[in-house]
Image (cartoon, rainbow, N blue to C red; front, side, top):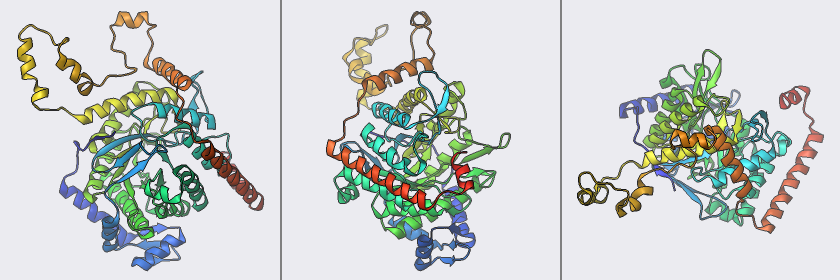
Length: 498
């Protein structure tokens, strides 16, 4: 499982060194804002120059170097079936869902509607069945569940609906601990969870140069329990980062490196992914452009920087601004995904299922993206050159004017050499017309329906399922009591309900 990338690079070794030096200067001279008091205090005790009032930490070079040295060059993430595992190291590439979309294209009507917990479950089941999707992240937000308990419902639904590794939740200490408790139940205890991590946490520095309180608080919990955390800024070139990609890379690199320093101070040896969600702001619309070619360039450069530091990486591929599964979605997704994979990004987030700058999820698109991921994986395997593959003896046996269909060599090597698509149509036009002249979205819709009708993930042990339900109820009770004691302000209610 997992194939190696790393065939594509755009920065020279001198370029990488220049970005590195620029980031060190940012950290030492400008610093980063750290809103979580414990992390800020920890940085000060370690030797950073801290302005407590402004919450600014100026981090010296030696702290960065020590953190890079402590961070592991690779780690393994496990599914609830421990036989299913992903090894993040070197230039091995894996694909995951993701996006936290608040809308979904209904599988029956094709119309956009608010996403629900049932959509989350169904999309987990769909990804569980699709062989080229390796990690299940939260592709939709369940709008029918209260926001303060949604993380518990999602973790429960995730563990029930897939054996593949899951994205965890690190928005605050309580939320992080809830998910640690739930994963510990599935793993067989906290110690087993430490030995075989099952959750991938996330920490997204707020560009420019800010580590927010809740995410910092939560990701420190994950590091203390041995769960890997990705550190991935979402810088916007021209808005929250310099318009030049070089300037964005220098700032993003400083944000990631300072996050790694916090992680390694919290727990030396904590596994981290060096990441990016960055792209450009489209100056015509003022919107993010995940499908932009520049997003692909940023992913390539981020992969190179991660390799420069000897750390595993996280990027974003398959981004698109298209609202439906159409030609725009196809070429934007294929381009950005291929660039990230060829660069050797270890974990490509959002590789399947999302549309409209990750605001909408699609069942059909998930199936289509699985096909794209399969084709990209085949490209990464490259071309074998050896005596068996060169096949000189077979060429001699067949001779001029012969054919290779009946050769044993063809049967033995077909599946190794050729990617065999599941939904792409390569038939003659006449046969395609006789079958109904279906476009790819129609075919993908039928495939999604078939999978959801037939595929049932490996069931959870009954006692484990009951224990998880118990934790969900405890979270509901706690948050209900908290809401009564601390009702949201009118402004907070307006934010929650749009």
